[in-house]
Length: 314
Length: 294
Image (cartoon, rainbow over all chains, first blue to last red; front, side, top):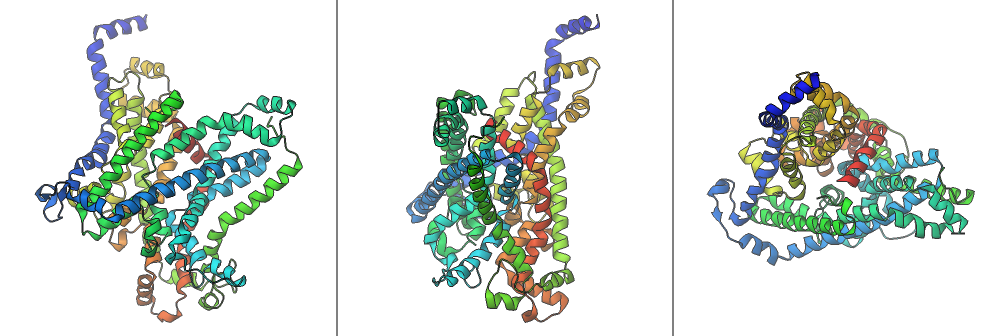
């Protein structure tokens, strides 16, 4: 009876009631919405700085318009090419090696007993908790010219010491290794969780058909793991214009001798901003990153929606 | 049953490979600890060693004589992490709750409003000018907290968790005349404790390990958080040594510079490195849900 009465009221006042309810819910979300507005949406309007000859003392609106000259300046310098090439090239290496090694680790973990998996998982995951600043101390201990561990080992084998922070040739290789050091544990656990979800009857029937270990991986595991592999792959491709600042700035010790190989859009914009010489151009290169990044995300999402509809983000 | 096709042979080889990989992963970190317990003379003579040639705690003894900066940075980092995590978790959950309600009229619009910030941003320069020249937050504790309060990613994650709370539960609370805020605090929050723990941990981790905001906006020594303190002694050991010699009156040359630097790293980063791995399972949960569900 009580319920019917409520429903009656509910119908009578429905429109007003629904509005009031939605308004109250809106109020609950409002503080966070305002913060998003302030720290995310307001800076979006700030992209006009890219079209200004920005001076701190004149402010955003007081600074003179510069048309497209900031962009012109950035794109005609060879820097634009270098930082774009480095960002895309290195991130592509990270994606490929990250995926392959993580899957290999996940497959190997899968063969081990529960206890072993737990131990190795914890160790593999450990670097994930180490910030890039602390990591830069650790790798400095390995790469220091005079005292570093690597040069010590080289000496034992009669090799010449390498001035790691000044020779850019080694860094694509080093960066991939250091990237794997930090991230492979996390992503292999991701794939391992995927493997745990595979129905064991697939393997049993494959075994009955006489499939070898490699064949089982090739024809059972990989196809069943494909959706998550593709999803993570495309998500990473969508982020290819953005780089892990800490890796490129701290671990390389911001060594100018390495910029040719290690400078990416994020570090370039940061330095341009910090040196305060040309804020307008820093803003222009930042906008370039945001825009192309935006297009990449949209494109990769479009691609996901073609491959598997339910995995698309929007 | 887990399908283990392989026999002992596979297991043994894989075990060996993982042991080797594990060693390679931890060796760089062991070097930090080892150097912190070495003497200057040994380092000059033998270079950095995996184990100290002669064990010495002198670097730590010097640091304990002038512990002010580390303590100060701990206080900054703890304040930022605690305050930031509580406020961020509360406000993110509130917004996540709003957009999780199927009967909320503007659910679609607000969800997009949140989601769009993950797709596009104004870039570093506009945010920098906003924070330092318009809001004037430079060199305040707030600049280390406010910019990270709402992360669209966590809001969407929380929304996913909260959407699983049945609407009938909320409707029955309406019958009892409970207001939205009361429903939120007395029904929603208690029901979503596991989700809050998971996301709260991710937020706390992000605040604790952050150097970025300090690097951009902090110059005052007494507001330097731990991670940024480490960065500044990495680039400028001289500065640290000068400060120490001024404070504790020792000869510059006597100070074991390299060990002190690494000892500082151990003291600043060590404790939390033993705490976070205990919560690993929450991290895995938060991250996998995030990565797979978007």
